[in-house]
Length: 415
Ligand SMILES: [Zn+2]
Image 1: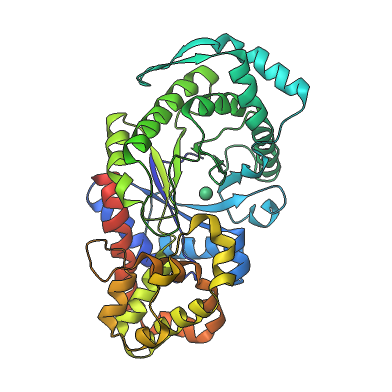
Image 2: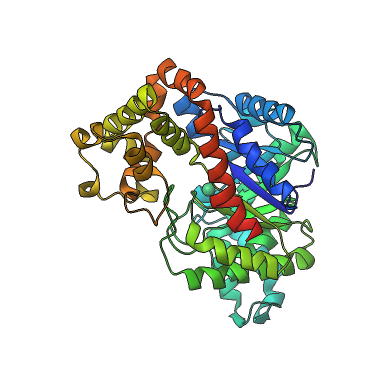
């Protein structure tokens, strides 16, 4: 099963926006750019929303059927590990193997030694076409990298084989992710990680390293864009070289777990994939749920009431909701509007405060991040929230589609 050159991971927490999301990909296709949609939902989201992996499959299949989408699309078991993969196996055909927890833990000495001796041929001056510089590699460099990453790759091998034993070879797409770690992986580290992946015979089509900079949820990139650009281009060069050197799948490409809305690096990502004529998978637009809240606010009446309720409730439970996301959000509490103030807002003011338009003076990234992690509040509104998604589906759908196409697909893939 082949993942097309361009693909994009989209999240839909409450599973009502499948067709609105797919409409954005149809729009791209009409412009001559094929991007495969990949619906993803992590185990944590399933648990909070009380959904199950087959629900995502149902949503994707139904959207594709309704809109007569004949091109490839996928359902991603997002950030799974050996403990929770089971529930995802039948419903998914794309698996993001998350082995970040195993990075920094050393494999056994024998495996480390074998790895170093196998890859010692790369010691000396490592020069990879397109890297723009050469790297001094010593056996100690390789050993250090092995100690940091070999165990994680071996774990990915175990998860891969578990899935393969049920689904059979070539019946799914494999991604290896190491993005949820403390420190970024350098292009040189990525090179040897890919070697280890080939040794484990993992036919990965995408790899998600942790890139330099902060990827907070639902807001823009925080970091040195020029540094990111250099690293991103070097990673592309490393992958192209490693595919040939280690015999990895020819369509292996980078996966950017963006945490959504990294607008300031979209331009250099677009430039790089065009320049190197390479593929890309980008996970973004987990913010579809925020477009639901924006649509509700714009709908006015009960919709606006619900949007306000979500904010007020989330604010009251700040610590509980932000806790699990502490490392990927950055909310300045004193910049959050008071509940009394928000209760007086009209539709336009609420929508403009939440919508990710950095040119708009009302836009408040603190407000946005709090609502982003506050989806549990909407879950608890139960039927009131779900009914509103139906009543206000037209205005919500318009926001969802426009967000995915205009703010993500267009800048990343079309340019
Ligand atoms: Zn990730």
